[in-house]
Image (tube, rainbow, N blue to C red; front, side, top):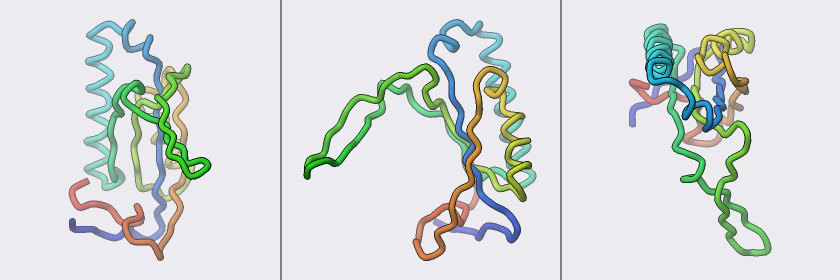
Length: 137
């Protein structure tokens, strides 16, 4: 896979989206379509200005797993469906935390659930870290 370096003076941020299952069941189709369209518009804008690294919705929590390694044994449990399960994420390239926060506020989900903003740590000695961006992402 072709990789291009992260431009100087920028940091990668994870914008973690939360949602509730009940919200999606109660959301009228036209509102869901409008929200999907708003995400698509934001994704297009972030791609055009080079700030989007990657984004994706996540499958239903029932399809996930919690994996622990304790006492020499692998333990797998179903993912709990808490009040606000993780629904998706954006990885974006920003010049500052304030810029990442401003982008998070533009995500449609921020109108009804908090969006977590976290900087990704730079680990230059480890190949495959997100300090480099997949071409076309």
